[in-house]
Length: 317
Length: 110
Image (cartoon, rainbow over all chains, first blue to last red; front, side):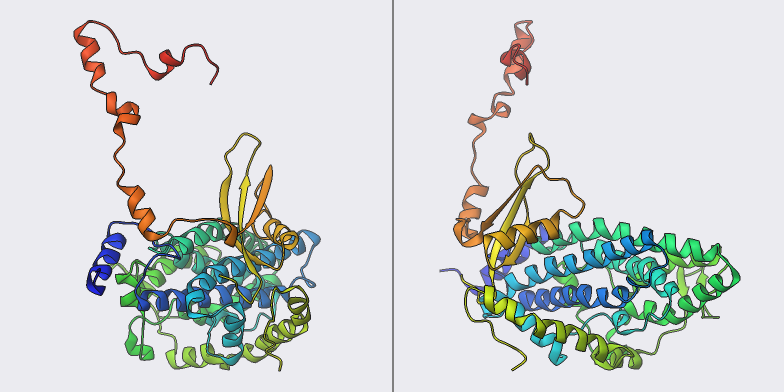
């Protein structure tokens, strides 16, 4: 008879020796919960993240740009498919499935990344999203490539390979605008100004002081992540701030500077109360994009019912 | 393991005619035909594929944790060339070089 302590020790030994945990392996409940929370949020963010960009498919400035942004939107939906699959296998023993993930999204229980609650009113925003939002996502996703959960690591490996294309697609849009007319440069500068705070917020608060709770410590102990929110944000600043400045653009934070003594960037903290409002569905575009997602889910429910192996619950009822 | 929301299919593919079949990922689909369409959509938007297989997960017998633990610790050096590494030194004592795998296989074209 194996005691629960022995099982837990065996599990932690596997994690600490670099073994990968698979869906059917025994895992502690809070490990499963942490994974479900992390991966369903990531997966649904990919899907909600396609929405601000898809707005630009019909309005892209050339056929080449249109093909590229369509490919990117398609990739994001593909990433959503991969990640939801990983989450579903974890939820299966709890008797939950994709239908429940969608219901949780619509009820507001399942949140998605702050950046996808925001407006993308100009082509400059399409560029900034692909260059800097995807750039930020690459930093947090590559950090998790070595995650202790095997299926998530394998999904991230596929995702990161495609993110590189997204970032370069973004760089290409940014470069064209930065080297363009005065109007184009102004358009780009406006986009950077509009997105700056959201980009800082993307990595989450530094400690739980800002928002009242944080899962960072547990996720690090379980080797789901290896760096803190602040370490990731610092990496982002080191990678992109010099490039923004090199293009002759500015960042809307007069206090932003690299402190040689601490080897850290100093910056104006975003308003974390505002962050909480945004991610709980009170951002400028939260309701509209959720409504769009809900409408398409309802409109396609007859397809799932017609093809499904057994009854599919209909959230519209 | 039946799910009320479609079924799980595992996707395998090989890059070229001579490469080994590789597991890609899994997906949800209502039937084989759509699983195939989804496999192409999800995993081969860029990657090249010489062949793609989709298999219903329920039709695959997989190892459970105990079975995995059991195969981990099998000692079978007697089946492997590394179990015979000492021969190299022995042959040197007789002023002979040990035949390599290539020498033993002779003129066969890999």
